[in-house]
Length: 146
Image 1 (cartoon, rainbow, N blue to C red):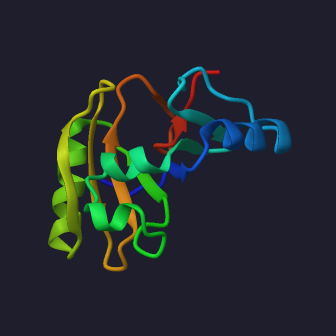
Image 2: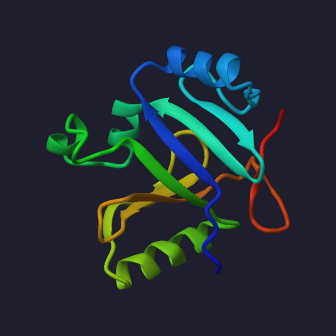
């Protein structure tokens, strides 16, 4: 399985303010895949997601002492959207064998997918995720609904 960076999620302090900045200020069109708690934007072959910072840290199962400290959690996660749940498990195992710390073991997500988080040696968070309702392009990139 090839590691493909498909999405960057920014943990934001004020979702409405960030939406206005990216939509009105930078001209990004929100995808219908978003809802009141998260926004998705197609940025070429990449996807940008905006999600409340506290909820992002909690979703990644970060220890409480890291959540409020920007030096310990910068509010950014990188995602590799995998074709199958088995690919998620394989990526998580491969990362752990390479020395990653598993922040959140892969598991069923409340939103209908399958997801886990690991940290690289410098503490950068990666999400290994299978989203069954997102279309994938020929290079493994995500194609969001409009």
